[in-house]
Length: 495
Image (cartoon, rainbow, N blue to C red; front, side):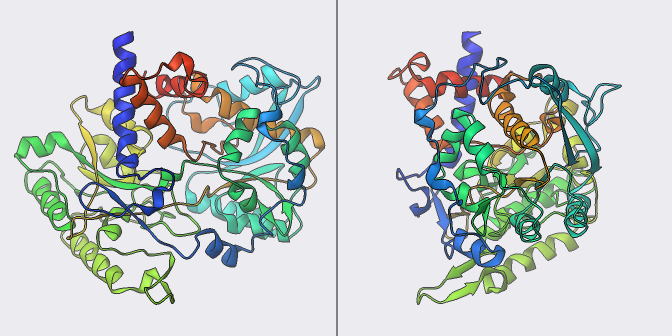
């Protein structure tokens, strides 16, 4: 077992080192160098641009001055146990109605289970007396966005639903549909959740605040969440005696050779599903699986972002010459049949089918996509060896753009009772604390209202902590954050 744990630590360190590589310390956005170091794209204030577009509030909740700091709270109950605050069991059943996006192709749900009757929902009912009732579902991004839009337009939001972007949050808030969630969140959010919120230095509270009212639970992800790479079948490269592509031209050549050799029978490069985006933007700055961000970045293109030139003038990154070059290359790849011919038209995850069944050799996405994006490819082919690499510019630079603190929000209906609002906060606490202890043979996406939270500095912290342990400078037993949180996460990911 010791050998397995060390292997897991090493694997995690290798993954995290990709995003930590070249960091100069506190601010990961100031790295700019050659080779494998990163160059963060400078945006016009990121959050400021989003504020202008979406109508953010003053930057603080009306009650944020009353914030109960995590350092003043007692430790949370250990996973699986209750306490009298953040993990309290109601003395009666509290029903929470919600709408949800599900993966219709997921096959992990046992026979007889459903979206609101599965191991996760039963866990909430048995341990907290929280009964979730799913009023409606949608099977892909476009359908879910339409469902949320209709619910806002018709003032028929369920007790809770996840806003896919901040625009939906602003629309619902200004239609006077959302509850002021501050009292329940401030009082009942777990110590761990509050610690995560505090790593954002006010950004998460700002984003969940509209016109002075804190009206949603914010998604919080690591600051490096939006670091994009391309993923390639290393076993195919080895089979054909090919070097790892470093530039766009080299990647296109390898994709063609995959096709010519019959390894990628239909196409070599996967693309987006219907409702997806080929690039991230300042409103949706992360989680852009199967897009082409790696290509845009290799052309120094920054579509979807407002930026400043050397003279300080604002410009729109979507209309630059660099963007036109990137689109020309992608068009050429599409014409040659290298890119999925049904890019942008597939639904319900069909865009990823050839990745999963082993007949597509290249896809792009955030650095964590290997673990969360394509596990089926390993199940279907034990020899599949996917590896992640940066795509460099012709000058040998690796450009990346940094992301916002989070892009989704758990909105709560203003007509929800105090018990329902409290229950939603507790559900979020449970997800953050207990996710690594669940039996994830049933996909964690079936957890109701799953809106993930992770400390913004988690990658940097994890890298430093793991390296200290591997060098013998520290022990996990003496690092509370590592021992209580990171080790369970590692075991969850690797075993």
